[in-house]
Amino acid sequence: MKSLWARLAFTASLLMLGMGQSVNAADLITVLNAAQTHDLEFLAAQSTHDAGLTKHDQANALWRPDISIQGGAGRMDQQTQTTGAQFVQNGTPGIANFNTSINQGTYNMWAINIRQPLLNGERLAQSKTLDIQANIAEVEWQAAQQDFILRTIKKYFDVSMALETLKTTQEQLLAVEKVQGEAKARYKLGDAPILDVHESEAKLDGLKAQLLAAQSDLDIKQSILSDATGISIEELKVMIPSAVDNSLDQKSFDYWLTQVVSGNPQLLIAQNQLNAARQNVKQFHMLSSPSVDLVGQVNDMHVYGSGDYGPNASNLNRNTSVGIQLTIPLYNGGMRIAKEDEAAHLADASLDKTNRLRQEISIQAKQAYLGLTIGSTRVQALKAAWQASESRRKATLLGKKVGDRSTLDLLNAETDAANAHLNWIKARIEWILNQLNLAALSGQLTVEQVKSINNTLQSF
Image 1 (cartoon, rainbow, N blue to C red):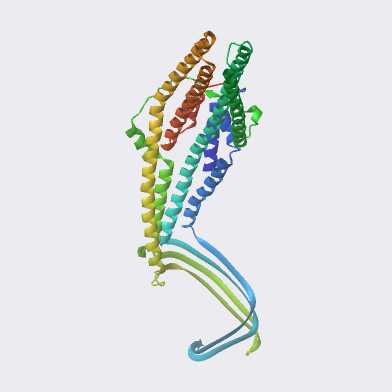
Image 2: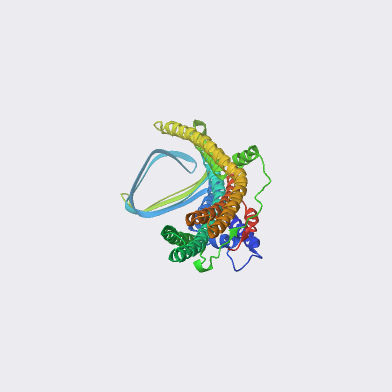
Protein backbone atom coordinates (compact mmCIF):
# COMPACT_ATOMS: atom_id res chain seq x y z
CA MET A 1 0.00 0.00 0.00
CA LYS A 2 2.84 2.38 0.82
CA SER A 3 4.33 1.70 -2.61
CA LEU A 4 0.99 2.48 -4.27
CA TRP A 5 0.70 5.82 -2.48
CA ALA A 6 4.30 6.65 -3.41
CA ARG A 7 3.52 6.01 -7.08
CA LEU A 8 0.30 8.02 -6.95
CA ALA A 9 2.06 10.96 -5.30
CA PHE A 10 4.82 10.94 -7.93
CA THR A 11 2.29 10.73 -10.79
CA ALA A 12 -0.02 13.36 -9.30
CA SER A 13 2.83 15.83 -8.89
CA LEU A 14 3.69 15.51 -12.58
CA LEU A 15 0.06 15.81 -13.66
CA MET A 16 -0.48 18.94 -11.58
CA LEU A 17 2.67 20.53 -12.94
CA GLY A 18 1.53 19.69 -16.46
CA MET A 19 -1.76 21.61 -16.16
CA GLY A 20 -1.93 24.64 -18.34
CA GLN A 21 0.83 23.55 -20.72
CA SER A 22 0.40 23.84 -24.46
CA VAL A 23 -1.30 20.90 -26.12
CA ASN A 24 0.46 21.67 -29.41
CA ALA A 25 3.93 20.89 -28.10
CA ALA A 26 5.33 18.05 -26.06
CA ASP A 27 6.95 19.74 -23.09
CA LEU A 28 9.00 18.03 -20.39
CA ILE A 29 6.03 17.41 -18.07
CA THR A 30 3.98 15.85 -20.87
CA VAL A 31 6.85 13.59 -21.82
CA LEU A 32 7.56 12.56 -18.21
CA ASN A 33 3.89 11.74 -17.63
CA ALA A 34 3.81 9.54 -20.71
CA ALA A 35 7.13 7.85 -19.90
CA GLN A 36 5.87 6.64 -16.51
CA THR A 37 3.80 3.94 -18.20
CA HIS A 38 6.18 3.16 -21.08
CA ASP A 39 9.74 3.40 -19.80
CA LEU A 40 10.62 -0.25 -19.21
CA GLU A 41 13.49 0.51 -16.82
CA PHE A 42 11.19 2.66 -14.68
CA LEU A 43 8.47 -0.01 -14.68
CA ALA A 44 11.02 -2.64 -13.61
CA ALA A 45 12.14 -0.33 -10.78
CA GLN A 46 8.53 -0.08 -9.57
CA SER A 47 8.20 -3.87 -9.41
CA THR A 48 11.57 -4.19 -7.67
CA HIS A 49 10.43 -1.60 -5.13
CA ASP A 50 7.23 -3.54 -4.44
CA ALA A 51 9.23 -6.71 -3.92
CA GLY A 52 11.66 -4.98 -1.59
CA LEU A 53 8.91 -3.65 0.68
CA THR A 54 7.87 -7.22 1.52
CA LYS A 55 11.09 -7.47 3.54
CA HIS A 56 9.35 -5.56 6.35
CA ASP A 57 6.63 -8.22 6.45
CA GLN A 58 9.26 -10.95 6.42
CA ALA A 59 11.06 -9.30 9.36
CA ASN A 60 7.85 -9.14 11.39
CA ALA A 61 6.99 -12.74 10.51
CA LEU A 62 10.17 -13.98 12.19
CA TRP A 63 8.65 -13.05 15.58
CA ARG A 64 5.21 -14.50 15.02
CA PRO A 65 4.17 -18.04 16.06
CA ASP A 66 5.12 -20.94 13.85
CA ILE A 67 2.12 -23.29 13.77
CA SER A 68 2.06 -26.59 11.91
CA ILE A 69 -0.38 -29.47 11.59
CA GLN A 70 0.70 -33.01 10.76
CA GLY A 71 -1.40 -35.98 9.81
CA GLY A 72 -0.81 -39.46 8.50
CA ALA A 73 -2.16 -42.97 8.06
CA GLY A 74 -0.73 -46.32 7.04
CA ARG A 75 0.26 -49.81 8.14
CA MET A 76 2.67 -50.64 10.94
CA ASP A 77 3.83 -53.26 13.43
CA GLN A 78 3.88 -52.37 17.10
CA GLN A 79 5.25 -54.36 20.01
CA THR A 80 5.37 -53.12 23.62
CA GLN A 81 6.72 -54.88 26.68
CA THR A 82 6.43 -53.60 30.24
CA THR A 83 7.90 -55.58 33.15
CA GLY A 84 7.80 -54.84 36.86
CA ALA A 85 4.82 -52.53 36.56
CA GLN A 86 2.87 -51.81 39.69
CA PHE A 87 -0.88 -51.92 39.80
CA VAL A 88 -3.41 -51.61 42.60
CA GLN A 89 -6.51 -53.78 42.87
CA ASN A 90 -9.00 -53.32 45.72
CA GLY A 91 -6.39 -51.32 47.53
CA THR A 92 -3.79 -54.07 47.27
CA PRO A 93 -0.69 -53.34 45.21
CA GLY A 94 0.81 -55.90 42.92
CA ILE A 95 3.45 -56.43 40.27
CA ALA A 96 2.62 -57.35 36.66
CA ASN A 97 4.03 -57.53 33.19
CA PHE A 98 2.14 -55.97 30.22
CA ASN A 99 2.69 -56.97 26.59
CA THR A 100 0.89 -55.74 23.50
CA SER A 101 1.28 -56.79 19.91
CA ILE A 102 -0.13 -55.55 16.59
CA ASN A 103 1.05 -57.06 13.33
CA GLN A 104 0.46 -55.15 10.10
CA GLY A 105 -2.12 -53.02 11.85
CA THR A 106 -3.64 -49.76 10.70
CA TYR A 107 -2.50 -46.50 12.21
CA ASN A 108 -3.58 -42.88 11.97
CA MET A 109 -2.01 -39.88 13.61
CA TRP A 110 -2.28 -36.14 13.87
CA ALA A 111 -0.33 -33.45 15.67
CA ILE A 112 -0.41 -29.69 16.19
CA ASN A 113 2.88 -27.94 16.97
CA ILE A 114 3.27 -24.32 18.03
CA ARG A 115 6.55 -22.46 18.50
CA GLN A 116 6.70 -18.80 19.55
CA PRO A 117 10.21 -17.26 19.55
CA LEU A 118 10.94 -15.27 22.71
CA LEU A 119 14.70 -14.67 22.70
CA ASN A 120 16.77 -15.41 19.62
CA GLY A 121 19.89 -13.45 18.67
CA GLU A 122 20.07 -15.02 15.22
CA ARG A 123 16.47 -14.11 14.41
CA LEU A 124 17.00 -10.60 15.75
CA ALA A 125 19.92 -10.08 13.36
CA GLN A 126 17.91 -11.58 10.51
CA SER A 127 14.93 -9.32 11.16
CA LYS A 128 17.14 -6.23 11.30
CA THR A 129 18.78 -7.28 8.05
CA LEU A 130 15.38 -7.65 6.38
CA ASP A 131 14.31 -4.21 7.59
CA ILE A 132 17.54 -2.76 6.21
CA GLN A 133 16.86 -4.46 2.87
CA ALA A 134 13.41 -2.86 2.82
CA ASN A 135 15.01 0.52 3.50
CA ILE A 136 17.39 -0.13 0.62
CA ALA A 137 14.39 -0.77 -1.63
CA GLU A 138 12.95 2.62 -0.64
CA VAL A 139 16.20 4.44 -1.40
CA GLU A 140 16.57 2.53 -4.68
CA TRP A 141 13.06 3.64 -5.62
CA GLN A 142 13.95 7.28 -4.91
CA ALA A 143 17.10 6.88 -6.99
CA ALA A 144 15.09 5.25 -9.78
CA GLN A 145 12.66 8.19 -9.85
CA GLN A 146 15.49 10.70 -10.13
CA ASP A 147 17.31 8.60 -12.71
CA PHE A 148 14.03 8.34 -14.64
CA ILE A 149 13.69 12.14 -14.70
CA LEU A 150 17.30 12.66 -15.78
CA ARG A 151 17.19 9.90 -18.39
CA THR A 152 13.94 11.12 -19.93
CA ILE A 153 15.00 14.78 -20.02
CA LYS A 154 18.29 13.82 -21.66
CA LYS A 155 16.41 11.88 -24.35
CA TYR A 156 14.14 14.89 -24.82
CA PHE A 157 17.03 17.30 -25.28
CA ASP A 158 18.81 14.80 -27.55
CA VAL A 159 15.85 15.18 -29.90
CA SER A 160 15.86 18.96 -29.44
CA MET A 161 19.54 19.17 -30.31
CA ALA A 162 19.12 16.85 -33.28
CA LEU A 163 16.25 18.99 -34.59
CA GLU A 164 18.26 22.18 -34.20
CA THR A 165 21.23 20.56 -35.96
CA LEU A 166 19.01 19.52 -38.86
CA LYS A 167 17.40 22.96 -39.03
CA THR A 168 20.77 24.75 -38.97
CA THR A 169 22.21 22.41 -41.60
CA GLN A 170 19.21 23.02 -43.84
CA GLU A 171 19.58 26.79 -43.48
CA GLN A 172 23.29 26.51 -44.18
CA LEU A 173 22.55 24.35 -47.23
CA LEU A 174 20.16 26.97 -48.62
CA ALA A 175 22.72 29.70 -48.07
CA VAL A 176 25.44 27.74 -49.85
CA GLU A 177 23.08 26.89 -52.72
CA LYS A 178 22.53 30.61 -53.14
CA VAL A 179 26.29 31.22 -53.12
CA GLN A 180 26.75 28.45 -55.67
CA GLY A 181 24.09 29.91 -57.94
CA GLU A 182 25.74 33.32 -57.80
CA ALA A 183 29.19 31.77 -58.45
CA LYS A 184 27.91 29.94 -61.54
CA ALA A 185 26.19 33.04 -62.87
CA ARG A 186 29.24 35.21 -62.37
CA TYR A 187 31.48 32.58 -63.93
CA LYS A 188 29.32 32.52 -67.05
CA LEU A 189 29.63 36.28 -67.22
CA GLY A 190 33.39 35.97 -66.81
CA ASP A 191 33.24 37.90 -63.52
CA ALA A 192 34.43 35.03 -61.27
CA PRO A 193 36.93 32.16 -61.56
CA ILE A 194 35.87 28.54 -61.90
CA LEU A 195 37.48 28.00 -58.47
CA ASP A 196 34.53 29.73 -56.83
CA VAL A 197 32.15 27.23 -58.47
CA HIS A 198 34.25 24.26 -57.39
CA GLU A 199 34.55 25.52 -53.81
CA SER A 200 30.81 26.11 -53.48
CA GLU A 201 30.03 22.71 -55.03
CA ALA A 202 32.42 20.94 -52.65
CA LYS A 203 30.87 22.74 -49.70
CA LEU A 204 27.39 21.93 -50.96
CA ASP A 205 28.17 18.23 -51.36
CA GLY A 206 29.61 18.14 -47.84
CA LEU A 207 26.47 19.80 -46.44
CA LYS A 208 24.24 17.31 -48.24
CA ALA A 209 26.14 14.48 -46.53
CA GLN A 210 25.82 16.32 -43.19
CA LEU A 211 22.09 16.75 -43.80
CA LEU A 212 21.63 13.01 -44.35
CA ALA A 213 23.59 12.25 -41.18
CA ALA A 214 21.58 14.83 -39.22
CA GLN A 215 18.29 13.38 -40.46
CA SER A 216 19.41 9.85 -39.56
CA ASP A 217 20.51 11.00 -36.11
CA LEU A 218 17.15 12.72 -35.57
CA ASP A 219 15.19 9.64 -36.66
CA ILE A 220 17.08 7.44 -34.18
CA LYS A 221 16.69 9.84 -31.25
CA GLN A 222 13.03 10.41 -32.00
CA SER A 223 12.48 6.65 -32.04
CA ILE A 224 14.25 6.28 -28.67
CA LEU A 225 12.07 8.99 -27.09
CA SER A 226 8.93 7.61 -28.73
CA ASP A 227 9.61 4.11 -27.38
CA ALA A 228 10.19 5.52 -23.88
CA THR A 229 7.00 7.59 -23.86
CA GLY A 230 4.54 5.89 -26.18
CA ILE A 231 4.09 9.21 -28.01
CA SER A 232 4.20 8.84 -31.78
CA ILE A 233 7.03 10.55 -33.64
CA GLU A 234 4.49 12.75 -35.43
CA GLU A 235 3.26 14.08 -32.09
CA LEU A 236 6.74 14.55 -30.60
CA LYS A 237 6.88 18.30 -31.16
CA VAL A 238 9.66 18.94 -28.68
CA MET A 239 10.86 22.37 -27.61
CA ILE A 240 14.23 23.89 -26.88
CA PRO A 241 15.59 26.01 -23.98
CA SER A 242 15.17 29.70 -24.66
CA ALA A 243 18.06 32.14 -24.47
CA VAL A 244 17.33 33.18 -20.88
CA ASP A 245 19.69 34.60 -18.29
CA ASN A 246 21.84 31.72 -17.07
CA SER A 247 22.81 33.26 -13.76
CA LEU A 248 21.92 31.34 -10.59
CA ASP A 249 21.90 31.65 -6.84
CA GLN A 250 25.30 30.07 -6.48
CA LYS A 251 26.01 28.08 -3.33
CA SER A 252 29.51 27.04 -2.31
CA PHE A 253 30.95 23.67 -3.21
CA ASP A 254 31.24 22.79 0.49
CA TYR A 255 27.47 23.22 0.77
CA TRP A 256 26.82 20.90 -2.15
CA LEU A 257 29.38 18.38 -0.97
CA THR A 258 27.63 18.20 2.42
CA GLN A 259 24.29 17.69 0.68
CA VAL A 260 25.72 14.99 -1.57
CA VAL A 261 27.45 13.05 1.21
CA SER A 262 24.29 13.07 3.34
CA GLY A 263 21.67 12.57 0.64
CA ASN A 264 23.17 10.75 -2.35
CA PRO A 265 20.93 7.72 -3.02
CA GLN A 266 23.76 5.43 -4.15
CA LEU A 267 25.78 6.30 -1.06
CA LEU A 268 22.76 5.72 1.18
CA ILE A 269 22.26 2.32 -0.44
CA ALA A 270 25.91 1.44 0.17
CA GLN A 271 25.67 2.51 3.81
CA ASN A 272 22.57 0.38 4.31
CA GLN A 273 24.32 -2.55 2.68
CA LEU A 274 27.20 -2.05 5.11
CA ASN A 275 24.75 -2.14 8.04
CA ALA A 276 23.22 -5.32 6.65
CA ALA A 277 26.68 -6.91 6.37
CA ARG A 278 27.38 -6.05 10.00
CA GLN A 279 24.07 -7.58 11.07
CA ASN A 280 25.08 -10.71 9.21
CA VAL A 281 28.19 -10.93 11.41
CA LYS A 282 25.99 -10.75 14.52
CA GLN A 283 23.79 -13.51 13.14
CA PHE A 284 26.64 -16.02 13.39
CA HIS A 285 28.17 -14.74 16.64
CA MET A 286 28.35 -17.21 19.51
CA LEU A 287 26.12 -15.03 21.72
CA SER A 288 23.38 -15.19 19.08
CA SER A 289 23.22 -18.99 19.07
CA PRO A 290 21.10 -19.64 22.24
CA SER A 291 17.35 -19.32 21.82
CA VAL A 292 14.30 -19.38 24.06
CA ASP A 293 10.95 -20.41 22.63
CA LEU A 294 7.46 -20.94 23.95
CA VAL A 295 6.44 -24.35 22.61
CA GLY A 296 3.20 -26.27 22.64
CA GLN A 297 2.15 -29.61 21.18
CA VAL A 298 -0.91 -31.81 20.89
CA ASN A 299 -0.48 -35.22 19.24
CA ASP A 300 -2.56 -38.33 18.82
CA MET A 301 -1.44 -41.79 17.63
CA HIS A 302 -3.93 -44.66 17.23
CA VAL A 303 -2.85 -48.15 16.11
CA TYR A 304 -5.28 -51.05 15.83
CA GLY A 305 -5.41 -54.55 14.35
CA SER A 306 -4.59 -58.17 15.19
CA GLY A 307 -1.58 -59.27 17.19
CA ASP A 308 -0.03 -62.08 19.16
CA TYR A 309 -2.47 -61.60 22.04
CA GLY A 310 -5.79 -61.20 20.28
CA PRO A 311 -7.61 -60.09 17.14
CA ASN A 312 -8.86 -56.73 18.40
CA ALA A 313 -5.79 -54.97 19.70
CA SER A 314 -5.94 -51.17 19.92
CA ASN A 315 -3.34 -48.71 21.24
CA LEU A 316 -4.06 -44.99 21.66
CA ASN A 317 -1.43 -42.44 22.71
CA ARG A 318 -2.39 -38.78 23.16
CA ASN A 319 -0.08 -36.10 24.56
CA THR A 320 -0.49 -32.40 25.27
CA SER A 321 2.34 -30.14 26.39
CA VAL A 322 3.09 -26.42 26.85
CA GLY A 323 6.39 -25.04 28.08
CA ILE A 324 9.54 -22.97 27.62
CA GLN A 325 12.35 -24.48 25.57
CA LEU A 326 15.98 -23.37 25.79
CA THR A 327 18.28 -24.37 22.94
CA ILE A 328 22.05 -23.93 23.17
CA PRO A 329 24.03 -25.29 20.18
CA LEU A 330 27.31 -26.76 21.39
CA TYR A 331 29.22 -27.87 18.33
CA ASN A 332 28.53 -28.03 14.60
CA GLY A 333 31.95 -28.84 13.25
CA GLY A 334 33.14 -25.21 13.26
CA MET A 335 30.64 -24.13 10.59
CA ARG A 336 29.26 -21.25 12.65
CA ILE A 337 32.72 -19.82 13.36
CA ALA A 338 33.68 -20.14 9.70
CA LYS A 339 30.51 -18.33 8.61
CA GLU A 340 31.11 -15.59 11.16
CA ASP A 341 34.64 -15.09 9.83
CA GLU A 342 33.32 -14.98 6.28
CA ALA A 343 30.66 -12.42 7.22
CA ALA A 344 33.26 -10.27 9.01
CA HIS A 345 35.51 -10.19 5.93
CA LEU A 346 32.53 -9.34 3.71
CA ALA A 347 31.61 -6.51 6.08
CA ASP A 348 35.17 -5.15 5.79
CA ALA A 349 34.88 -5.33 2.00
CA SER A 350 31.54 -3.51 2.16
CA LEU A 351 33.13 -0.75 4.26
CA ASP A 352 35.96 -0.32 1.74
CA LYS A 353 33.44 -0.18 -1.14
CA THR A 354 31.38 2.42 0.69
CA ASN A 355 34.44 4.61 1.28
CA ARG A 356 35.50 4.24 -2.35
CA LEU A 357 31.98 5.15 -3.51
CA ARG A 358 32.03 8.22 -1.27
CA GLN A 359 35.21 9.35 -3.01
CA GLU A 360 33.72 8.74 -6.46
CA ILE A 361 30.50 10.57 -5.59
CA SER A 362 32.51 13.52 -4.28
CA ILE A 363 34.40 13.72 -7.58
CA GLN A 364 31.12 13.54 -9.52
CA ALA A 365 29.75 16.34 -7.35
CA LYS A 366 32.85 18.43 -8.10
CA GLN A 367 32.44 17.83 -11.83
CA ALA A 368 28.74 18.73 -11.76
CA TYR A 369 29.42 21.82 -9.64
CA LEU A 370 32.12 23.05 -12.00
CA GLY A 371 29.91 22.26 -14.96
CA LEU A 372 27.19 24.39 -13.42
CA THR A 373 29.31 27.35 -12.28
CA ILE A 374 31.62 27.45 -15.27
CA GLY A 375 28.78 26.50 -17.58
CA SER A 376 26.91 29.73 -16.86
CA THR A 377 29.92 31.77 -17.98
CA ARG A 378 30.48 29.41 -20.91
CA VAL A 379 26.92 29.95 -22.17
CA GLN A 380 27.40 33.71 -22.14
CA ALA A 381 30.77 33.40 -23.87
CA LEU A 382 29.39 31.13 -26.59
CA LYS A 383 26.47 33.50 -27.09
CA ALA A 384 28.93 36.33 -27.65
CA ALA A 385 30.95 34.08 -29.99
CA TRP A 386 27.84 33.29 -32.02
CA GLN A 387 26.87 36.96 -32.23
CA ALA A 388 30.40 37.79 -33.37
CA SER A 389 30.32 34.96 -35.94
CA GLU A 390 26.95 36.16 -37.20
CA SER A 391 28.29 39.70 -37.56
CA ARG A 392 31.34 38.34 -39.37
CA ARG A 393 29.09 36.35 -41.70
CA LYS A 394 27.05 39.40 -42.59
CA ALA A 395 30.18 41.48 -43.06
CA THR A 396 31.74 38.80 -45.24
CA LEU A 397 28.56 38.61 -47.30
CA LEU A 398 28.70 42.36 -47.84
CA GLY A 399 32.42 42.18 -48.58
CA LYS A 400 31.77 39.43 -51.13
CA LYS A 401 29.29 41.64 -52.94
CA VAL A 402 31.79 44.49 -53.24
CA GLY A 403 34.68 42.17 -54.11
CA ASP A 404 36.67 42.43 -50.88
CA ARG A 405 35.97 38.84 -49.80
CA SER A 406 36.21 35.56 -51.69
CA THR A 407 33.64 32.82 -52.03
CA LEU A 408 35.74 30.66 -49.74
CA ASP A 409 35.70 33.42 -47.12
CA LEU A 410 31.92 33.51 -47.26
CA LEU A 411 31.60 29.73 -47.10
CA ASN A 412 33.87 29.60 -44.04
CA ALA A 413 31.93 32.41 -42.40
CA GLU A 414 28.66 30.54 -42.98
CA THR A 415 30.15 27.38 -41.42
CA ASP A 416 31.60 29.24 -38.43
CA ALA A 417 28.30 31.00 -37.72
CA ALA A 418 26.34 27.74 -37.92
CA ASN A 419 28.77 25.90 -35.63
CA ALA A 420 28.81 28.79 -33.15
CA HIS A 421 25.01 28.75 -33.03
CA LEU A 422 24.89 24.99 -32.36
CA ASN A 423 27.61 25.26 -29.71
CA TRP A 424 25.64 27.96 -27.91
CA ILE A 425 22.47 25.87 -27.85
CA LYS A 426 24.37 22.75 -26.79
CA ALA A 427 25.95 24.70 -23.92
CA ARG A 428 22.48 25.84 -22.77
CA ILE A 429 21.28 22.25 -22.67
CA GLU A 430 24.42 21.04 -20.88
CA TRP A 431 23.99 23.80 -18.28
CA ILE A 432 20.44 22.64 -17.56
CA LEU A 433 21.54 19.00 -17.32
CA ASN A 434 24.30 19.98 -14.89
CA GLN A 435 21.69 21.65 -12.67
CA LEU A 436 19.58 18.51 -12.64
CA ASN A 437 22.59 16.23 -12.22
CA LEU A 438 23.87 18.12 -9.18
CA ALA A 439 20.41 17.99 -7.63
CA ALA A 440 20.17 14.26 -8.33
CA LEU A 441 23.59 13.61 -6.81
CA SER A 442 22.37 15.19 -3.57
CA GLY A 443 19.04 13.34 -3.71
CA GLN A 444 17.12 16.60 -4.17
CA LEU A 445 15.87 16.33 -7.75
CA THR A 446 12.11 16.89 -7.78
CA VAL A 447 9.43 17.57 -10.36
CA GLU A 448 9.29 21.16 -9.05
CA GLN A 449 12.75 21.70 -10.50
CA VAL A 450 11.59 20.18 -13.76
CA LYS A 451 8.79 22.77 -13.82
CA SER A 452 11.28 25.63 -13.57
CA ILE A 453 13.24 24.15 -16.49
CA ASN A 454 10.04 23.53 -18.39
CA ASN A 455 9.13 27.23 -18.16
CA THR A 456 12.27 28.14 -20.12
CA LEU A 457 11.31 26.05 -23.16
CA GLN A 458 10.19 27.57 -26.44
CA SER A 459 8.94 26.06 -29.67
CA PHE A 460 11.20 25.78 -32.69
